[in-house]
Length: 309
Image (cartoon, rainbow, N blue to C red; front, side, top):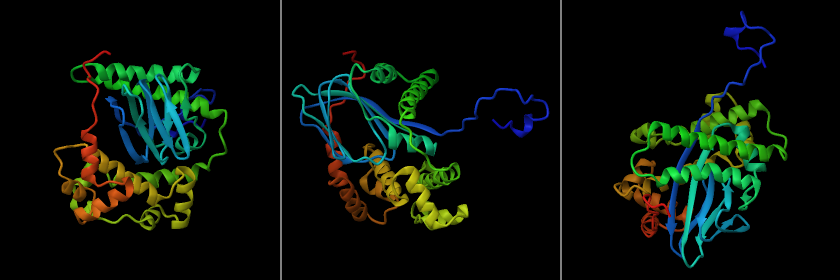
């Protein structure tokens, strides 16, 4: 490893260094809930990874062209951009824990999308290791009261343990990755796209309504639009336009979950010129209007966090 410049004057060349890590890791939407027979989530795809643990009952997941029947203790990993439908077919209902996560290291994301194992059946070695971390989250979710700073560190520590399990499984089947320079530019493009959805930008009407063009992003990075499209597609597996569309859909769903926000407010926050335009686009994404989607959310029976059953 190259010794950083500030240390070269007094550090021996025989020193052993750990690599520097500067990752933006995000865990969100992690929750436990109980749903009734017949419950179903419309087809969707996320810009992040989704990890599902079945606690009780049976769930059917349609993942692209594959069908998974998940029973108690089974774990399923859904990579970014994978279209999927989750359904409860158990007469007694279903209880599950789900978490969404992401990390802005492009090579890690690329390997995860290409080589990660998706299904971890109950009783397998990898399942037991993943389940140990996820059950810590479950126990925290069952507690009453506010989460402490120590709890937040425990939650994040669990996520890194899960990263470790997934990365070890991938390493045996890892394919050749894109060059570091290409991965670097792909990461910058993704960050530029994501920056339009931070809270400050969404409060700013001018920034909300600004059109996002890959040509402008490429120009700011001093690379050609063609090269920008190429490296982004290689790393993320989808085009920047598709990635941006998934970000918008994800943000729309997160906002619709907030009952105090009117649908017209959400449309404005996402930069749509009219409620009708937003509603048409949302229906193209999900097959239902924003109001229908909100009504469907209202039919979910949430798990009692004070229960230990």
